[in-house]
Image 1 (cartoon, helix red, strand yellow):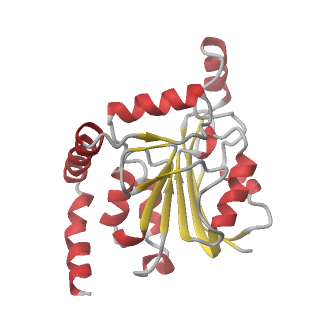
Image 2 (cartoon, helix red, strand yellow; image 1 turned 30 degrees about the horizontal axis):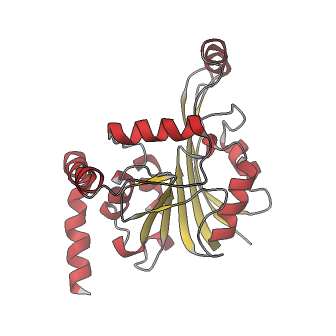
Image 3 (cartoon, helix red, strand yellow; image 1 turned 135 degrees about the horizontal axis):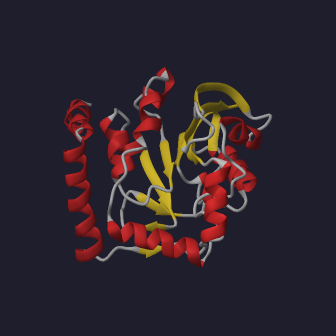
Amino acid sequence: MAQSRLILRLARFLRVKLICHAVFKLRFWWFVYIKKRLRSCEDQVGVDGHQHNLRALKLARPSDRILWLIQPLTAIDKMMKADVKVLAIGVRLETDLLYLVAYGFNPQNVRGMDLLSYSPWVDLGNMHQMPYANDSWDAIMLGWVLTYSTEPQKAADELVRVVKNGGVIAIGLTYYPEHVLEEYRKSQGSLMGTTGQIQTVADVLKLFEGKVDRVYFNHDVSDPSRQGPTMVIFSVKK
């Protein structure tokens, strides 16, 4: 017990971005280039999506926007119990998991899942058919992942399956105004990571219709003519 408390105290230093990124970089180089642990899920979204993920992973450029979901998640009292099990989907790099530990989640109960993995902390899997039993997780995070799905309703149903009754789902995505989407359609045919169908909190919650118990946190862009984040954290009733 004392050892666990010490680990959690030391983990707080990972809230400093320079420290978190340094730990991530060391582990990334060790597992990818020394141990050669990079693996790929057989059930890929598609060739374009796979290549996009692979290029992004090898660039090893971490993003800190997952903190926009983690920080409000820690304000929910039931989420900060020592036995809470958290799954982060689409983590790609370990920084999401390091930040979860930094903000008080038990490292023994934090896992990631992605189509690509180099990390012993990240399972291979597809969010449309996850390798977990029913009611496995107290909390599930999808940071800027859901809009990559071509079957978001199927992904939502799968989330409900693996989260516990009363468990929490946290979702973040990017809102794109129509003029931005139209520019991409003209120049590239589509914008990677969005179908243009899931843009707002209401769009997300509609996927979970009849399953939403309580909305703890939600954020839509204040100016719909500008690009920005959409975020929602809610509990599930089954």
